[in-house]
Image (cartoon, rainbow, N blue to C red):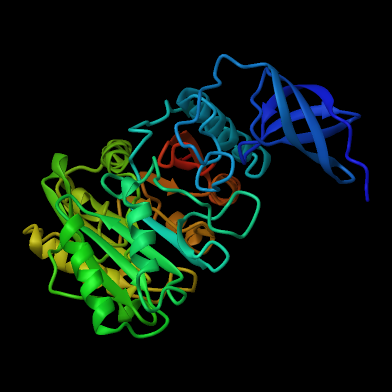
Length: 435
């Protein structure tokens, strides 16, 4: 048996992008989960690499003033949150530093102005999530939750502090419900969606349910005031057990209400989303005579508020179902100056009609891979402003470097928006102008 590595004492000097503390020892970086900058800790190395080591935290000898008591009892085991031990202020500081580091290191760009982080509620904020489900024969019960931090198992939790209420307190009841079904070992996940006035739970069922299962699911829905859906196959197969109330969320500042399906992409943090829209539109500076292009528009989260302040806006998205709902949302809100198109934005779209039009400003909110294929189109339109919303600082940094170095833009402002408190996820905004 291999002897345990002896404990060592070290000073934590920084935070890694994934929330782990970094110590410098023997000329190498040592990553320590659960440690914060400024802390003196005892650690035990668990994995050695050529350029860095990984270690477990044994004891905090001198804690940081930014260390706080995690609210969740499963913190450290559940992989849903990585940074509950750090104050929200330190979390935002670390994310801002990560963004600026990636912009400079990958994109070789520095924003002229660093924006103050946008912040919202840090608990009970998550209105969309995919929860894993697993029947554990040895325990003779079902587990529902996120994956463990360092293992592929479902964390054993009874509640979740970041899920929107009342979902946070429904984790154990959902597990007990699945455990009572005839197909308890054939339900791998539950998608949850919280709207302003209703909640939907989508149970992925690999086998058909029985009539008794159906009654249990409907009874659960009635007791907890949620709409129960089943998904026996792909996304298109998801359907409610009974006719259900439409899922909607409001954007009051722009008098807009959007309807969505429970498996649609929406921003998970409703309060932060409200701030983000206002933030983005303020920086875009579109006037009542301007034409705006909204790339990767989804349901119209930015498109429809934009329609309230600009002359016309055109939204483009690759998912035809989302575009159908975006058009329906425009009609729902009496908006007539927003048009939409379906297009794969990872391909050459220069021959499409909308791509030939003139636009005064461009807003984009791409997926994690970024928007590299769209950058030549954006540059060719010579917009007065480009506002780039990003969920991955690495792809944003790459695209920022291309816009600046190859297309003659300047990065006038950038900053983070804390969409996912207690995680290492970095949501950010970057604003560009032609030089």
